[in-house]
View 1: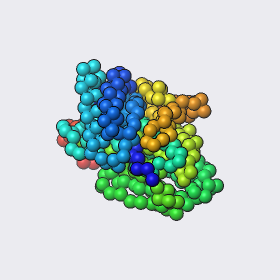
View 2: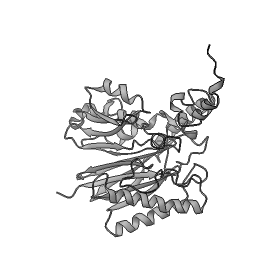
View 3: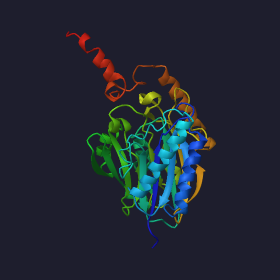
View 4: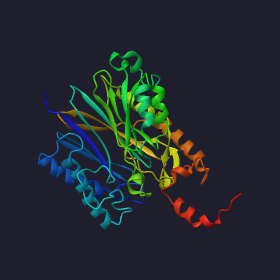
Length: 366
């Protein structure tokens, strides 16, 4: 049996061009040079560099397993080098996702978002990598539920024996730093009780109950909880395996036909529709949005990333984009009012604490 292969997707906002709308080509080129050197040295098997909005995305394959210090340091050093490029170009928010002064063995808790999985590569191994901008951790909750639990979305749950046994979900409480597992379909209602609050409970991993193998992995880092203040959007990433014991490629993509309303958008303080776009169109500019999601598809071949295919670069997604614009119009009319602006309890890392402190002495008892 071949050695296990690990897919690591690590992202960070290290400088926007212009404002928060896109990545300057020089940052991607800097990252390619860094990862290219690592590949020549045998540190990684393969890599792909891309961007979603103003987030630099590092996709690597290697044989060191998840949470590997060498791989995480490679990503950290790549972001540090890119930050220097961003500073020279005076890009906006240069290095804003790098919350630590120095690398401490793992980028988790230091700002970048991470989604990783270690697998035994199958005879055919299609993987889909989702990246979002102007969103937050937890934005994958609803799509992952649709992919792996909803038979109206995933026909294989009904007609494919390998999917009929269901899936196991690993849920993280990102405020209390706890995790719990639910098995579906038996525990659907218990699962929904928690993942319906994506600002606190996030789906970290999904596993097949047919053979226990991992099906999906997502990033769950919340920058505001790490830094104690608003420092940027969380812009999560996700890796999903497809076919055989997992939903088909089309079933994995299908949840994004509808522009689910998620938190993020302008200053991370507004609800907005998640719009599926091509990688080229993942450059949000209207009110710094609306939020975007892209999906790159690869076939793994002995750890090599054969691709990518830009999965949302297809006219069949035009109506989803049209619907997202209609939802965006309606929400924008609300301006600073809920439900466009996040509720106060979700605004604790913005200017709200300073405003409350300034006005503290002016509140009177009724």
